[in-house]
Image (cartoon, rainbow, N blue to C red):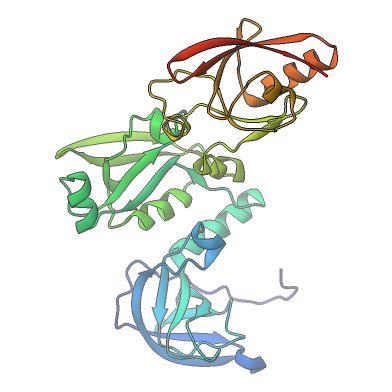
Length: 331
């Protein structure tokens, strides 16, 4: 917030319409020199440099050769009509000074953030629940794709918007709300510019057939993004073992196929009660005292209570093609 009156907000231009070769000016305070203006051209578009959040942020930089130096960050990049097309952000340089390669966040990414802050006081982004990458000659060959351009769905999270809408790994998204999609990054950015609860219309190429899919977006949160990392092993107190839920990935890791549920033992403490009872890494706990195991947290709480009260814990355990019963008694 700026405590001043009579200020004229900058007009927004179109970072989508601007082209390589168009003239732009960067405004800022390089090295503390206030109100400095430098001129150059748009050198490139759609640059992804993995600067934001280790590559998991939203990036679609405009590249410019207008001189950008320390002190320019956060300043406007404007076209020759004085319209804002980008926000100066970073440089690529071996010396730390401008080498003619500067990057600006396009206004098309910045404007939804501004609107969200004004409306909600925070930035809220849409969440698709899918792993997305570019369509390129390599992916076309590897996956036998029937589309030359678009965003390839590499994977979907069960129970999340993409999966709920029927999207599948191998689908190629070619349009979103009628707008052509040229890359995975573009799809991620456009989904992120939507609000939680919004519906988007995706045109999808599936094995050469064009279908339309409506997706109801959820909210992109740290918890939602953590689902892409897969389940992590959790220690079950009192048992002396680490477990994780059965997923297709964890099942393959331990050589199983067609598991329908349970908890996989990923490690066992040598002196723990689990080891003493014969439990091993790779075992799948399918039943606990005659009931399905549920989540790791639920199982852990129940086991701790049983062992704490001196009761016997009976586990139905799958090991390879064998199913056996193990009894564990607390120390």
